[in-house]
Length: 322
Image (cartoon, rainbow, N blue to C red):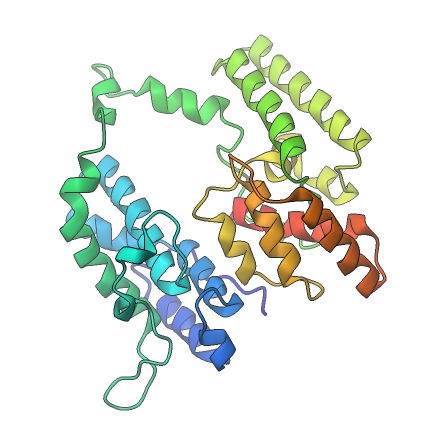
């Protein structure tokens, strides 16, 4: 599989949409590739998730940004389910299986139906039919937290003390040799919990003391990760904050399964399937089985187990950075 990724902003860029369509058409849609949950379907889902296609359609329906963001997330998850044939939030027992994405659909001239066109056409009715139910879940409007000048301290605080906000753009493009040996399960959760709690304790302040506390926190955790061999020298080039975010931040539940569509240096589909459930906010899965599979992949390819862990971690980190 190629490392190609689509442009983020393509809702208003016909050329970018055509490029994505061309890559979808270029996939060899064998019977195995057409199966639900296949690596090819997961790859296409990851491409959709990396773009603003759905957001562009929600922009036409919802003038309020909060509603637009909420519906973008909800619709994107449903489209990913339709592409992969795997449930994320909805119940597959309630699906109309004829409504899932079929890569073999052709138009009257025998050409494969545009993937971008399908995604855009499907987004609108999904949003319209479900908006009232989805938006009703919102307990409080974000605008209610604004002060009289329109500033929103909740948003300001979130962007200041959340280690995920925001990563430097183009990390993997600027550092193609970057390797991120993300740990699995409880060890990652524990380290991330310490980082997250420390940042919240420091708060959003931009004064010298707050900045020094944050720097000390990053330095201490970075040193511990090095001692635990959860570090690669390539990470030194991107700065501690970004490195720790790529190393420890949880993958969103709807994004983690997309690892199965990413390229890997060796055949290790089973290792990927066992690994991604350990990378979410609530890790699950069998870590013992994962360790055994990592060992098997290492032996089969004459590499170190650490190299396999780093390959898996880098795949997850690419999703964090996308």
